[in-house]
Image (cartoon, rainbow, N blue to C red; front, side, top):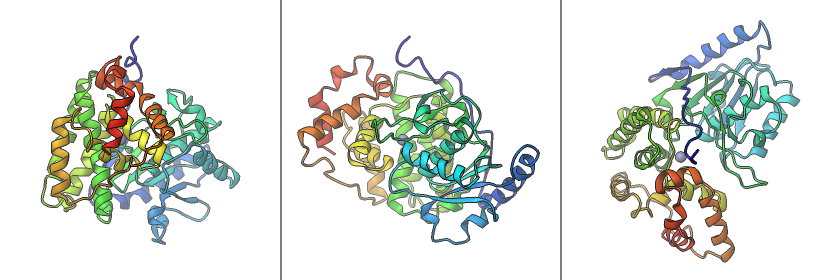
Length: 371
Ligand code: ZN
């Protein structure tokens, strides 16, 4: 069995989805119907996990159908999810008697959606988040969960994973499981209207980068390739368009994000994501901006995508952080190398089993120094 012979043969897609401008108004009814279903064998309360970006909007939880007796938690997006933060959240829900909800609603960006998936799995499976980092370790279905993305690109709304970093071990790996997939996803392009432009661009590019990496890899899946090609087409339309945030293009990017998520489920990424993960683990940079910083230095590995990325970022007048790896110490160099090469599957997908012949320590560091 080779490194790539794992994990992605069987694919589960999102159970149901609703798409369209104003679709978010239907979340209330979805939650109400789950309260009725659940009252036969459980409790009627619901759990709402809302991106803290929306904390200033006082009516946000009730607009999603929250009622007295429900748990409403704002999810911090300062740092990406950690297994420790997920465990703390689950403990809090158990402590307040919200451990058998009718549904868990995740409303926000990738961090919030991933948190909702992990919490849903842990409420029924018990144990700690770190116990399920890997492939198919989740034993039973999680609590019913509804995902509502408010920014497009990560594809978290469609995938069977939820990325988390274990602060004790440094391991950044999700709960890859059929049970991690949302039962219902509500896609409403109106929700992405107020996203800051730079963040909209960086996050949207995550979909593009996943798919150019998948299409350049050696592990292929015909259905995944079709999802990837259409995702790349839509991203080109959005980011080479006049205004990437027009009503039409925000709608296109939301579709691209969803399809990109479906593509990831059947494929592996390539060289960009391992370097990006290292920037996240070592410097705490967020996933999407880190991806863009890496792609900007990956001319040798992805010449066409690199050229296209430069065109897109210039066209949309987005500023990329520079010199993030200035002043590397020996310790930082060692940490960056280790955090990059541990991602064997994507690196094998991109460069073959012997990827260290291409990615020597010196080459890895010279790439980081370009970022
Ligand atoms: Zn990504």
